[in-house]
Amino acid sequence: MTRSVVADPAPPGVASIRPQSNRARNGRTREETTVAHRTIARMTMIGMLLAGFTLGYVCGVSTPRASAQLPQVPGMSNPLAAAGQMGSSLTEMEQHVSGLQKNLDALKKIQSLLGGK
Image (cartoon, rainbow, N blue to C red; front, top):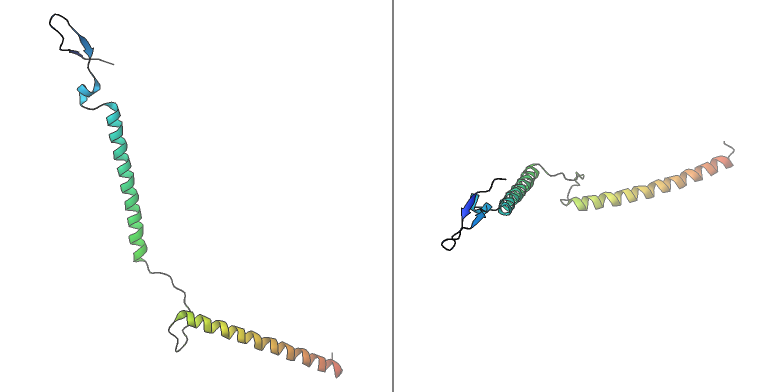
């Protein structure tokens, strides 16, 4: 490392020689330069993250949202009411099927009494 020499203002007749500091050479110390670089790097990263989230938001808003495609029941404008109506219809159908199964069992008993298979 090369050192430049600066004469200290000393009393007359006494010569003092000391090395010139980094601050005198370029106006900044090494620590200040490092801090400045870190600050710039952090600001750049924050800007890039902000730009990424903004781009994602803009692209996300511009695409249509998915929605459930429930059957439209005449007279019902609310999709939840239509889903409730469909649920009660399924329950009613299940009761009818179980009733038909009982009738089928009764017919099989009668067939076996009459001498069928």
